[in-house]
Image 1 (cartoon, one colour):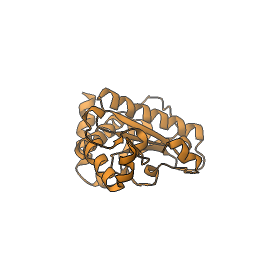
Image 2 (tube, rainbow, N blue to C red):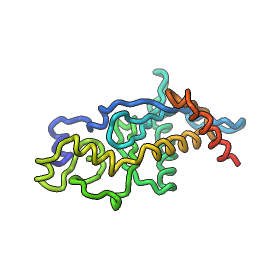
Image 3 (cartoon, rainbow, N blue to C red):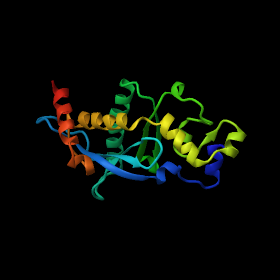
Length: 205
């Protein structure tokens, strides 16, 4: 089934948008260095999906009150997304992107290269990674279950957990090397803080 036909039937969200989420970092995008001119009036939040078969980063503006202008929020998100995507490109990490919530949430899915994915019965395009699976044949569509597809996405398409954890730490270190920010949740209570601080110091050398 084509994605366009799904939306014609009033399907307004990709399944990935309904997945559980948790935050792990936020930044005000205010410079640490004295004398630097702050270019953004809104911060950004970094999150990840919980329980979704492919590792996924979430970016959104950190809107703390009703006085935040929409344009300021969009500019902050665009800047943060640019930093993240440039990092992925420089690190040669393939990825897919979904922009949702009228442009206010970005899902970034780091993944394996297609050439490394074998024996899956569906196309590994962004629609499949976001929950609208595009099967290669009618037989595959009729015989496959979501549990089977989910397992294939997790084991063959998704970035491994250890690599994803390292990616998050690298991105946090990149932002903390220039901007004010803080870890949120479990990472703020573990050795992640010390590891990120070391990474930040190394970036300054």
